[in-house]
Length: 177
Image: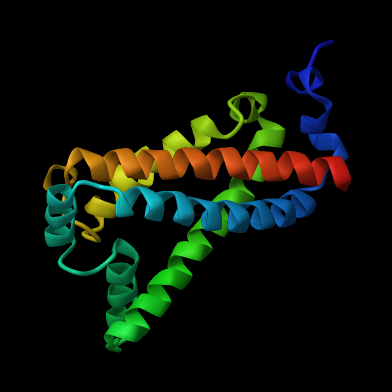
């Protein structure tokens, strides 16, 4: 009898515990979050100035993660200063990246189709669902139409790099552990 997992032995879930996959995924997610930050920062630095001004105006000087931090603080009856907002926002960003890496690590081993795209499908789905869907739905940014196409392209490129680096890091960790 053929199983979905026989195609690639590294995706055989019977050889890997969920805990081990979660730990490897957390490491891979952290590496990928760092790389994604470098990719998107480099792209932003080279962007057309008009596009940057339009994006900055839409953001009103705050990142989506900073707005999430403010909303979380308000929910518990607290206010944040600018520095606190950015620090907590950065922590939210890293936690989301690490959590996404952990989720991908578990999914790719248990659903062969997830790992078959080497992280690009995951990165694309994450970008579409989170950046383009959930973030504006939660009021963390204005809707997608408020931003120039360069913002969306940079976000997609960042998440494609996130997915690829997460997958590559997991493959490396699988080879050594």
